[in-house]
Amino acid sequence: MKQKLKNLIMSGSCVELIKETMESYPGSLDEQVDEKGSTWLILAVKSGLARVVELMILRKADLNKADFDGNTPLHHAFLNNFKSCIEQLMLAGADECAENHKGQRPWELIAVRDF
Image (cartoon, rainbow, N blue to C red):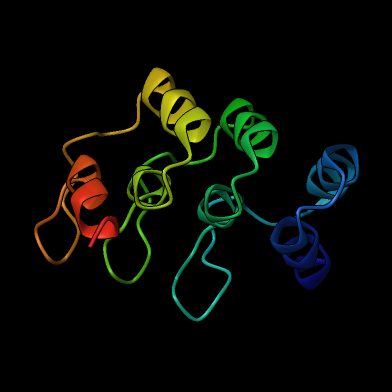
């Protein structure tokens, strides 16, 4: 089930299929699911799946749980310039001042991306 959900999110599958699989998933949305420490929410953000991000916010996913580099979902949204994900995370209360292990706040990654 874990691999199926991961594959669906990473491939950008139909939102309804991801939702069905997510609802039947017995684990926590906050668990780290890959070698980089990404949570389900981080995977959805990195894939730019705004509707899935919205579903995970509604299911109370931890908005500030970071990966192994200290990057939160909001860091990844800014890094990839996914404006709808940025808006959703900020409106839901994600910490815009959280620093990763390099001392970077999410909004500072815009400049990193452009170089």
